[in-house]
Image (cartoon, rainbow, N blue to C red; front, side, top):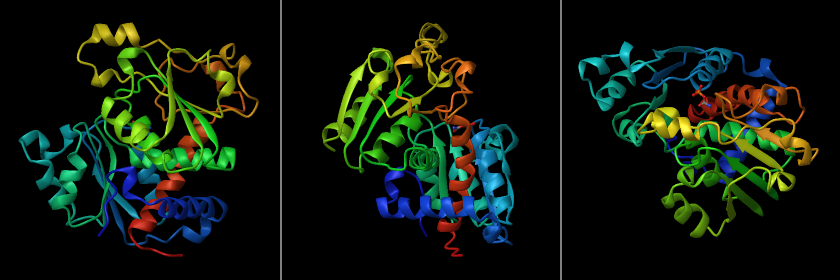
Amino acid sequence: MRHLIDPMDLSVEEIDKILNLADDIIANPVKYQDACAHKKLATLFFEPSTRTRLSFEAAMMELGGNVLGFSSADSSSATKGESVSDTVKVVSCYADIIAMRHPKEGAPCLAAMKSDAPIINAGDGGHNHPTQTLTDLLTIRREKGRLDNLTIGCCGDLKFGRTVHSLIKAMSRYANIHFIMISPEELEIPEYLKQEVFEQGGLDYEQVRTIDEVIDRLDVLYMTRVQRERFFNEADYVRLKDTYILNMKKLKKAKKDLSILHPLPRVNEISVDVDNDPRACYFRQALNGKYVRMALILTMLGIDR
Ligand code: CP
């Protein structure tokens, strides 16, 4: 039984297969409409979510399967003191596959040790978000036609933003990727990732403080919100939250084929006037999330069409 806890749990070849399957699902949805008949997905969300939980549930429904679960710890027996391990052990008696989000880093890894069903990490604290990464890879590949030879700017809260952490790990395995990390000093990428991914992995990167100084060089701009829920004090959040606001004026110097991604939710960091620009990919990205999760569910359940 395989779990998906970290984006590096999947080889590049396995990722390619999942992305190819997602492309086929997009092109031929009818072929897959009952592929998961009589299968159940449990969504255990100990932390809020719109896209990840609902796209997982929509994915399973579009595959002809069923879903069960909870959308907050408050509506589960966690409020009575039940451990994550016990919760997952029990739910794995009821479901064939489990998608789990938890505010504590490592919780899905702990859950996987007890579970009798495959666990998919749907986001653990500021750590990893591997299914967002699959969504991002599918989006970049569909928009740019490739996953190599790219200059990618990651902008915003690079300290707490787990989507960026997972994305840089996954992209480190493709050729000729140059990362430009755009953040205030306090929200720089954590030291352990600089060491593990950039320095030990030999990945090319630079750190800058403004979008303006690099926008003309970017093939992909990955915007992120400042993660209010992970700050220790509100004053720091308020001071940093509007450091970056992407608008049409800032995009004047950008490439005509720039792809603007954002895992969403957005707060203020992308002005709504950007939404109608063809370079804004973030709503297409959210839709891709459903298709790539369909592909992942099929893959992890070993269902071949
Ligand atoms: N991108 C993402 O993880 O969104 P949600 O928090 O709404 O699931």
